[in-house]
Image (cartoon, rainbow, N blue to C red; front, side, top):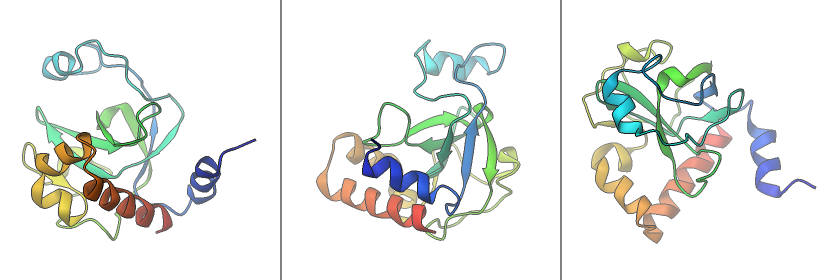
Length: 155
């Protein structure tokens, strides 16, 4: 028997905005710059090849655009993964996002500074502070995150 959240996400998967499919579930020197390999630190990535994910936000670390997605294991908050581990399935930008310039089909063309966030206003404006509040499980921040996540799923 499927749980309600899984069923909800499955039924909405064709209505959502930026969606990506995982094409690689590891970071190595064969597919990543050294800075990303060091950042990943040989950790097992919580993504599955062939699975589709909703992009809640984008950022840039080490000169590489990353997608914030809800991973397979950590469903309480989004994690950032390098864009080249995914292929684009749906390129529509969420109506919740602000200040997006570039072509989502070409992540290297996205106008974003190192550490900036493209997403909804509260996350885009406060960047690491907002994400830190997510990690700290601040109730108001999580409520806001889930509210935007749900809006993005309904778009």
